[in-house]
Length: 198
Image (tube, rainbow, N blue to C red; front, side, top):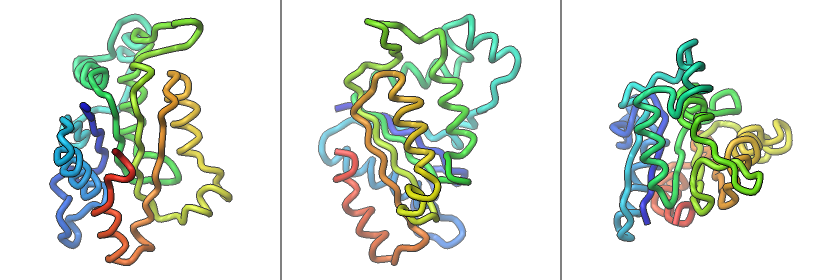
């Protein structure tokens, strides 16, 4: 299986080690995911948005390209071509203000370009319908509050509003509340990351 991981965290993958004020649980999830996937003989392609200096903004020319061309820009083209090769795509990021960071939102806006949409039997498609989508998020809000009080905005947006519109049904989202968990629980989640992505 070929897996593409999309990481969005300002500290990049380099922050996967447990060094105070230089660490990211999102990066640790990414590193452990890469390790477990490779241990199971899967190939992995990492898109580290911050390390790539991805520009998430669609300006006037970008919007014109989005409407009239196959791709918004060369970087977005590169990303989409890599995603199209994936059997599974894993998005890893923190939750800020109940949704994803701006860079990942811009990634979705720019990479899934109108010029790439095909319709088969009325279904809009960009990626193969067999593509597995896994979302691993890190947030401070307890899960039951996120789902009951905030009504799961991120899950609804991604499952129904983005990948559902593309016809991708093999979708799972996992919320990690690293702030409220003990160090032992965080370490166990990292150790057992395979159950969420394999």
